[in-house]
Image 1 (tube, rainbow, N blue to C red):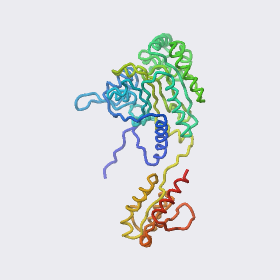
Image 2 (cartoon, rainbow, N blue to C red; image 1 turned 45 degrees about the horizontal axis):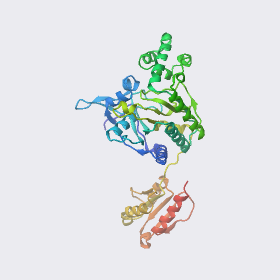
Image 3 (tube, one colour; image 1 turned 30 degrees about the vertical axis):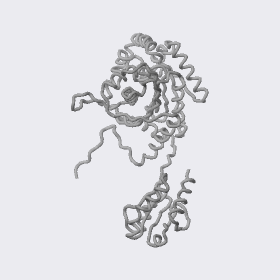
Length: 426
């Protein structure tokens, strides 16, 4: 036997034991999106590198350091998507989705960034992404934030806290960028190498620094709110009023910026103190210039993305119980001829109970061994098919979780009994 092949560092397997937590997060998100009228879109994992260099920005850490980029066999530069927004906008432009139309879209799937792997931060990570394109007012900002708050409520999460800020228009932000550059240039000897690099490329990113030695410098830096244009102030003030009207708590954080160049006006993050250094579980904002930047017309847009791994970790950190779907019934057979009918009987049950989980024994052996497997499966009932049952046109039902007598039921009564158990389940 040869050596086992190991996975690539930072690209993790999601094992069956985790399926209940993942399904809980993904199903809750899907249900909320559908309730708000958002439609699913699926985009490729591979895109032309130009898409991300034009949208995210040549000077960002993602483009400069983190993207998985390579040449394909035709010599074209190809990149594994580091985020979903640019791909969704590209798909919308290519397929005419934004021509005199508004779109509410969502997608999910793996993203890829070459970063140092750590808890809840991986090189292949899964995101759920929501975008509303063609809506200029603060109403859709409030709706998107409310949807994320609804998701935390649906999952039972209590630790996420909402941080909000407005970056203003690109023009206002350009003035602020120069003010920041002047300020940090005066204390240049106190900056670390990363901040020195950001000073030239994008001084707003210095406000993102996690270096404790820079805390006081950052606190005393010019405030973005002092440079906002009147329209952005009006937009932001109305957003806050709408969030107040639905009792969503928030903190206005004037130091909150986004790492991608395409953001403008509203930006927000849901943060938690339960995941160590990886505090952000959901981030988003408005990107009114991106559609035109990628070849379309001027089109307002906003979106957010959450990391599924981080939310799954947060469920565990908050000690929330995730219910795993176990089989309602496990079919076993006694004898060669009854075993040949197991598949037919199980399929008839699945047809009558499409929402039930019905397992069928595929190992054989003695009835005792099959019943042991039925018990280990977590099923509530073992359904026993033997010659006595076949002669009467029935199936024996043995309760595995309750001390009740074994009974024989015909197929109709069996389906009705299992349906009743399903309806009583939490």
